[in-house]
Image 1 (cartoon, rainbow, N blue to C red):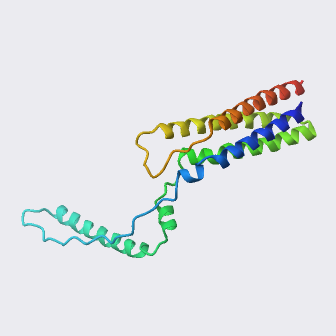
Image 2 (image 1 turned 120 degrees about the vertical axis):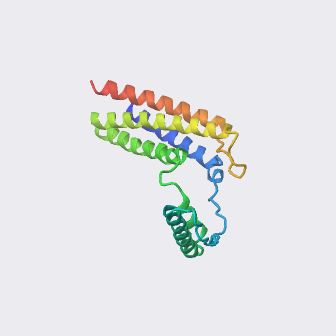
Image 3 (image 1 turned 60 degrees about the horizontal axis):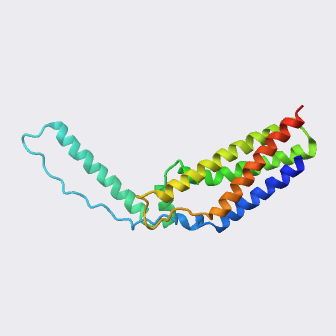
Length: 194
């Protein structure tokens, strides 16, 4: 039964890989284009009025210093290639869909490795780790599907970035194979743990 789950897991992974290859995911989010770097113009310094207080004068000099700093930064950054500019402007934490695009297949592959170890060695610990990883993979896959569905239905998505689209038949095939894999892996781990 463990070999049957292994073969089914491989079929599910193959269907998922084919689903990724045939989707528009690679074209869904093109590389960020950045406008040409412009140097900010320095505002003319104005003399503080006689009625102005000292903190107002200090604020004026602080804004002047900030503009000089930004001018130096813009002069330094104007020769950066677009990829470096996009990397500098990218958020530190990736967006949810990008994280799920990595985590779902990664968990599936690691779980498949543990299930292969369970099939070869028949160690209960490896089997239960694989079942937990397939559970996490299913949860990540459902979250990824939901995020893509919401992105496709979003009305305020930019026109130049189409939402990811997947073939419905392949999604159903991959999802049902994953469901059967999950059920058989849990059943196998339960039966062999006694």
